[in-house]
Amino acid sequence: MDPYAELGISPGASSEEIKSAYRSLAKQYHPDSNPENSDYAEKMNRINEAYSMLREGRYDLDLGEEWYKEQYEEAGREEGILYHPLFRRVILIGIAVSMVVVGIAAAFFSALRV
Image 1 (spheres, helix red, strand yellow):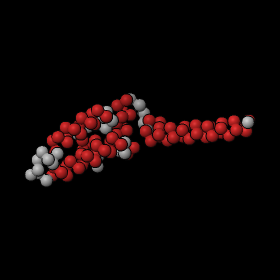
Image 2 (spheres, rainbow, N blue to C red):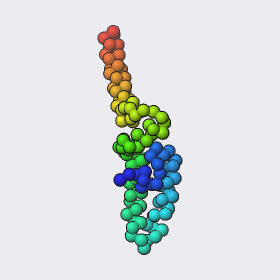
Image 3 (tube, one colour):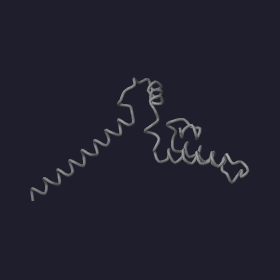
Image 4 (cartoon, rainbow, N blue to C red):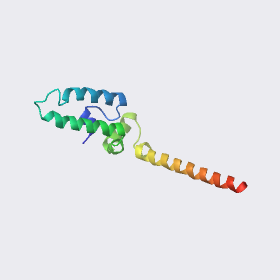
């Protein structure tokens, strides 16, 4: 399921756009507003799932190469690994781990001085 398509917004939408789209669709498809239509409950479940996926960031890692390629072309950049969010997250995790190792080493060596 593509949560962006389910909510009717474009990939990379801001959190306010996501929230606004969710609220308008929730008002429109809420089963309590139309109890005679059984399809509304199914649609509302998909809307809730899409919203929770985007709110929790569970989908953005798997947007797909096509979306990233479009973004590179729009920005006038060549496609490359440096612009891929997964690569950026790996780099940030590497930096965080390095900082932890340096902190542990600093604590170890400062304990030796005492």
